[in-house]
Image (tube, rainbow, N blue to C red; front, side):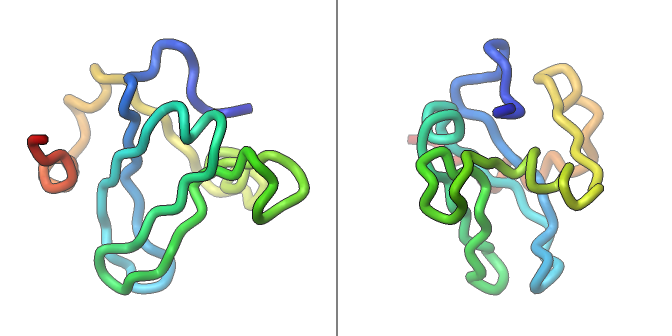
Length: 101
């Protein structure tokens, strides 16, 4: 399962804490890359690279994404709609990652 349904925005995002340096951060990605390609995100704190999605089998024989990876580890996964984002306490992180083009 991709973790993203048809109602997700064209530019979905992720808020996470790096498991290497504990930096909390927000990043965005293209919906097409998440669903069909490979998404790697570099930590803004320690430069570690996090695998978010691999639909091409580069790192695993099967398609996988961060939702599936965390569920396999019995870790909490929470998906948010645009409405849910109004309740997120990490809004400053989102503002840092979304830069005008």
